Length: 546
Image (tube, rainbow, N blue to C red; front, side):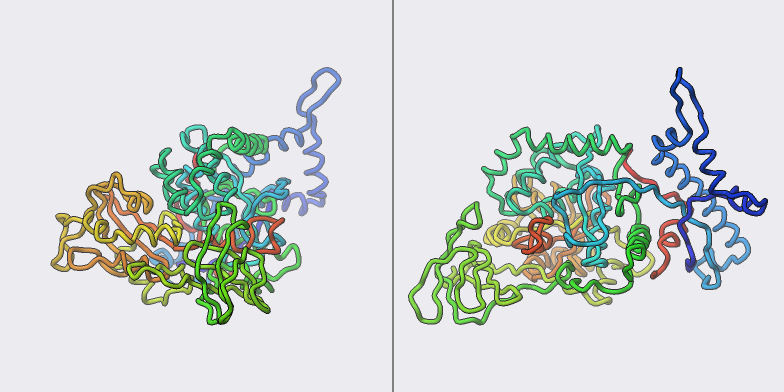
């Protein structure tokens, strides 16, 4: 395996070196060339600089293609001299010095648009994508990882840019805007990306139900033309910038055409942080606040008792009936002070969230039905390495699982309601012909009208293979325990003979909503060089939707 070092970004060419050696000023010569007149129309002229400005993105794409060709050739030459490097041997003595082309920088006005991450972050990633693009779905997972790695340092601002052949692209983007009006844009967007391969009109309302949105308000919003106008405005902006495909990410304006690996985006983020005087290797002072892997909200031990709730589609109008110590129950609304240092943050159907000094706590409704299924919110504590290895490499190094297609947020209240009917849901699993450990794998039948299985992204005939690190078969089915475990649920299944993989999390609000969805709500709220990871393969990394 190659160990990368010293990959620098550079926009020059070999002519610069020869000009310097010959005593000429390369920058002066370059500027002179750019001012060269290449056309006259009457008394007006067009310079080479004006032409290049129009095609700056296309020229960079060509420079990347040339870089890829050079890198692949260089890689072959190194392997020819040191065959052991081709088979993953030690190559720590190899310094990769081929300069990577510097992307052009465009001025992208993010204004007061909703964003994920720290509103005051020094680096902004403006992302032009389509919810029906499988490459955007892959990039979305990478962006989630970047928000965790660079917690506090970066913010992600989405722009809608559906391709003309994405039949549901415009409506999908409009649906995200409608979810945003009810405070859950990011969880809803993540959910749509998990359905990028097979998106249809039913997906929008089904996902809204699953995430606990007010259905009437959502449907009414989706029917209004204003949301499509917002999508059209973003699309027009992308076309004016010269974009022709998705995904495209602008790192503080630096043009990065995707999809790309996490380390590729990290290269430009690190460069921007260094340019602005920050150390990319250091943690942001408020990293804990912006990191996805934050702490779970635990049950309070305060002398409080929740006797009833009234939940409105407008959260500020919801109320909770609370007893403080042994006093009579009183009615409180979000923002009301309950006792010293304790404020009611939000009201839910079966619990309330409390702001206790500088952190959040949970208070559950008393006197719940004995059959009530308790579904904790997902804790983002990282699994240990051994467990992750069993999940991602069930058969050892020889065969690894495919990467997950996305992270689907399951609304806590919705999931609790669905699991009341667990006995009926279990009947949808029937023995398949495949056998593992002496037991038949389980196939899903009769789920066409099942809200539960449809929401989880399953289709008729899917064979569920694994849940987390356990096989699913006629002898065991860990799906139910996993969904009520309070941990990320990792599911692998077979569809039409091909493996699929998805992850589920249970949240009452998405992480990004909790932290503030935009600048106006902020108060509420290198390892291996990137190019060694992304460019060392002989296969070009240009799988964008065109």
